Image (cartoon, rainbow, N blue to C red; front, side, top):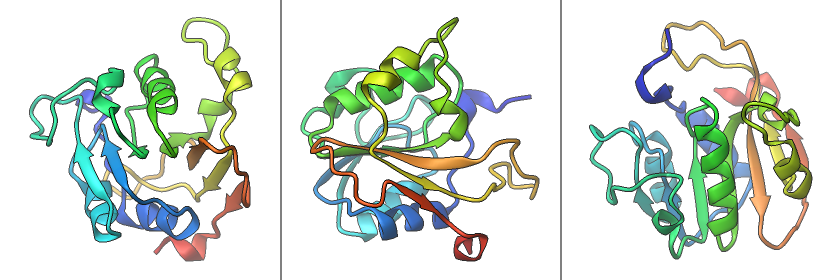
Length: 177
């Protein structure tokens, strides 16, 4: 059974890896803040972070829907681990990519890159908006019971300037602790 609102929280090492491979600064919006794990590391890196969440029980800085462009007004970066359930995930990603002034970093399953056409299509959008960078990490458990997920996750990064420095980073298992 899936958790309510797809609440699978980000281990701190994954955000630390993002920050070690991708400079992020300025005003950051974290629209699916959950337990705040990503937020704490972004603020620790000096980012001014505004939060939101799709779960009304979470008390973010700004209450708003993650698929509402108004929630991202003025954001240099949008960084989050969105719920993977479609079409919500696709809608959060596409809205964020359209709104960010500098870049977007989304922790997603690699299967997000599959060019689907039916039911919840994202193939045409991905053809026009491929990620500029990927930080691919070893499988990890998001459930707290030590069991791994059935797919690998990666930070998919879209940069407004189209820069493709080190377009694919494969993180060895040893760097995950």
